[in-house]
Image (cartoon, rainbow, N blue to C red; front, side, top):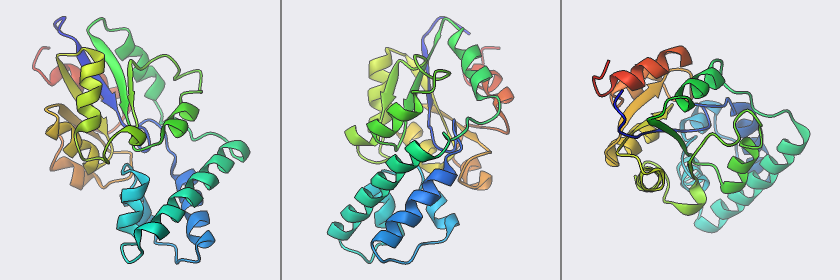
Length: 222
C-alpha cells in the first residue's frame, strides 16, 4: 500500500467481541424489571449496534420515552453487574492476530466506532490485548446513533487519515461508513444476516484471516 494514511475503523459487539450472552442477559433483566414482555433474541440482536435509546425505541415502540429511559437505566445497571460477576465477552477467533498485522503497517491506524457507552468501551479496552491499539474511539455517549455518520466523520478527523474503511457486522455499520465516505467491509460472524450486509458492503469476509488482504485490495494497490 502507499504511505497515504488509512483508518481501519472497527465496530465492537459482533465484530471484535461476541457479547451476545451479556447483551441478551441484560435485556432480559431490563424487561423483567419493568414488567414488560421480552422480545425474541433475534429481534434483540437485530438492534445491536444502535444506541440504547434507539434500540429500545425499536424493540418497544408502544412505550413512551420515559419508560424507555427506565429500560435503558435497567439495562446499564444489569450490564455493569454482569461485568463484575461473569467472564468477559470473548474476542472472535483471529481478531488479535489481525489487529497485530494491521498495527505493524506504517500507513494504517486503528479506530473504534461503537454503540457502546464510554464506560462499556473502557471495560472492553481494559483487556490488555486490546489496550493501546486504537488512536480514536467513538461511542454512543457523544454522537447520534448509527447509522448517522457522526462517529465515522469524527474518527477520520481525529486519526488524521486521508481515507478509511468501516469494519462491522451490521447494516448500521455499513450505512454509517458509506454516509461518511468510507469504504465498508462486512463480517459474516456477527449479528446481522450475511445477505443483508452483502447488499451494502464493498467487501465481505468470512474470517479474520481474510481481512488484511481485503483492506489492502480496497484501493487496488496489490
